[in-house]
Image 1 (tube, rainbow, N blue to C red):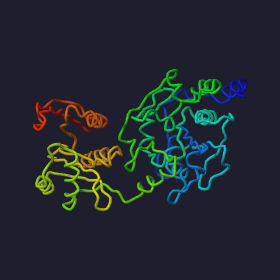
Image 2 (image 1 turned 120 degrees about the vertical axis):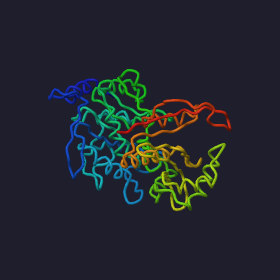
Image 3 (image 1 turned 180 degrees about the horizontal axis):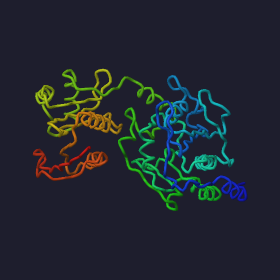
Image 4 (image 1 turned 30 degrees about the vertical axis):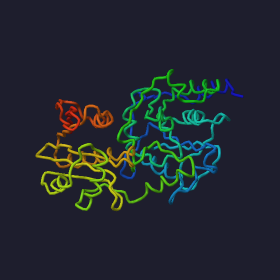
Amino acid sequence: MFDKALSSEIIHSCFNNRTDGKPYWFFTHTVKDGKYRIMDVTCAILAGGKSRRMGRDKATLKCGEKALINQVYDTVKHTFQHVIILSNHHNNIYGIDAPILKDVIPIQGSMVGIVSALMFADTPYVFVLACDMPFISEKAFEYMIQQVGGEDIIIPRTGCGYEPLHTIYNRSCISPMLKSIENDRLQITALLPYLSVKELDEHPCFFNRGYSVFTNINEEEDLPILNDSMSNETIREMREEDIEGILNIENLSFISPWTKRLFEETLSSPISKNFIIAKDKVVFSYIILYSVENEAHILNIATHPAYRKKGYASQLITHALAYFKDNNVTDFYLEVREGNMGAINLYTQYGFEKIGKRRKYYTETNEDALVMHLTML
């Protein structure tokens, strides 16, 4: 049974405020091996699940050269100075130099693992991750931590719902979580209406190697995803031999596609810069830009229908913006169909703003185009 007295005692002994007068969300850093590490956020990797669907321990399941949990640990250790593992099934794990702690309450459920991590941590915030998320990235960690403003929970919300196992929790969640567990309410989402919550929408940093950072490995059938992500997929400049593959994507994506001649002229233009994502000779996605002096214009971007929703467009935009910023381009422009909310939302996440409208710009459908602009200083 759940012990209420134990609950109060744990809260009293574990919940400590900062003594330096700074707010919870004032994060300090240390430098090790030439990299900054966040000191005021503990990373907790949950590895105590039963792995029912997999049929064997997921944490130590070897994928490639490393077990899943080692892949997660090797990523987080570059960002966080404090890392802990929560597991009732492991006493030690080869290759992991972090304490392995057991749940404080003998009840199965991710909320128990989360509240246990909050109790063990001596930092105001804990970044909770599952052990079976091979696509997590330092960029996503850093972006989420930058969003902290004193809330109880900072949680991503995608088209698939909330992502409670890639979320930042304040230790202020300890008491409400223990109360929720006492009442046999073990879903994190049930707590959200009663706490201060910052929801994070889709963002380009939530994609890595073409997959969502929230992707987890639940079944044997998921393993090919991981193997595929380790292939030689790269971002590179467009070449003439890529045009046939690009034309295929173009024809599948647009009512009025560019012609082969137009792509050839673009490749030969001194003011164009064009990037693709490809594996071997297969093109997945492409972006075409023209630049003059300190301005660049995104003319065309598309992804093969079979490879959409993997973040390829985001990767190309990120790559292109970084390239042009390094070459002293500060202003970016584009046109987008007024009804293409998916694309508009993507561009808005990068900081593009609507500055005008071109009436009946798309002649094949008489649709208006929104003109969007981004300044990068």
